[in-house]
Amino acid sequence: MRFEWKADTPPEYRAAVEPLLKLWVWLLPNWLDVVFIEYEHKSGSAGTITRDRYRNATLFLRPALLEEGDYEREVSLVHELCHFCQGPIQSVLERFLEEAPDDKFKADTAEHAMEQVVSDLSHALVRHRRKAAH
Image 1 (cartoon, rainbow, N blue to C red):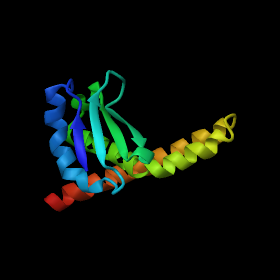
Image 2 (cartoon, rainbow, N blue to C red; image 1 turned 30 degrees about the vertical axis):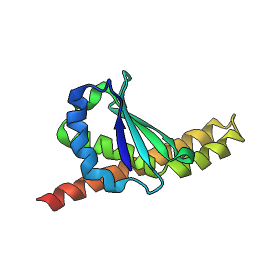
Image 3 (cartoon, rainbow, N blue to C red; image 1 turned 90 degrees about the vertical axis):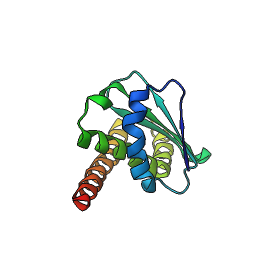
């Protein structure tokens, strides 16, 4: 597994994120060969696109990431790495939902459930790591 940084990623983002990625690389799923990392001007701190069929994913770093404190930044990154882990499940879910494109309730409920799992897991993992470090 490797990280590929887009050339125009601001150096301050790489300096803030790279040590955390090295710390959490063990969390990435075995199917993932490469994570592309790039900066984008959107709201929020980070985002992802997972392409499990092609064994790669993209981590988007956003302006709010550097405004977060150390704990929040770590949770944000772990949150996105957890999305990579559930990428294959998300792909299957999206295919099922394509069969019922007008059922917004199912789509919203599924998205909320996936987000809740990732959020809870990322907080638990970071709390555990920080507690074990002390």
